[in-house]
Amino acid sequence: MAGSYDPRIRVAGTGPPLVLVSGMDGTGQLFYTQVPRLATAFRTATYALRDSAAAMAPLVDDLHRVAAELTTGDERLVLVGESFGGALSLSYALAHPEKVRALVILNSFAAFLPQFRLHLAHAALSLLPWGTMRLVRRLTAFRMHSAHTTPEELQQFMRLMRATTREGYLNRLRVLMHYDVRQQLAQLRAPTLFLAADRDHLVPAVEQARFMASRVPGSSMRVLDGHGHICLLAPDLDLLAIVREWRPDLL
Image 1 (cartoon, rainbow, N blue to C red):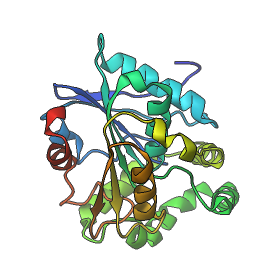
Image 2: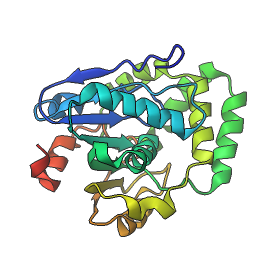
Image 3: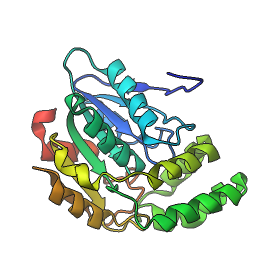
Image 4: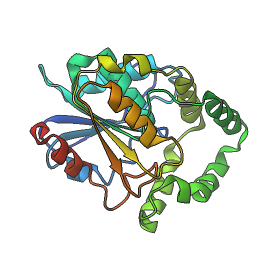
């Protein structure tokens, strides 16, 4: 990797390769409840996004290097991308279709609209003392998380978020200001499952999933009833079970 970037790749389990691509936090640590389940069927990798990347291209390159470390020969990846990670996964599949076996896109979008929200968030985050982010996360938890996520998981979420950086958030907001794959969706050929939480208050996940599913050939969509934007910590959400039901041939 260029510079001092450390992807902190973690791999668990054996089987076909699967990479979990993180959202705006960029830490790769918020999949901790899902990894043990996925690792029973997949060689499951998580990694940290590059905080210094202010464009999609270097993030796609980083994911390609992760893919190279996880695969051999003509192996292809299952990519599971959450929110920002969904945007990155779609971008990667468009750039490297030969490396993607299947896509699972969770609470994500083909373009983040309206754009003024990104600019407002960037301005606010630039001015907000970074130390207050913990309080902001606590105050917004009821809107961001699934209602039945346990207090213990919310505490673990708060602990893990200490690893996030202002630089990472600001740069990923900049990336989304230039991200728009709406006209390229029809080029995707890998089997794709769009997952959308019906109580997502950050992005219109169901609306976006329907839009993308209507344009990606042969894709599927599933609504996650009763879930919020940060839903992977909820006790009743099992990615492995969802993938097994959708495409048992991937296991």
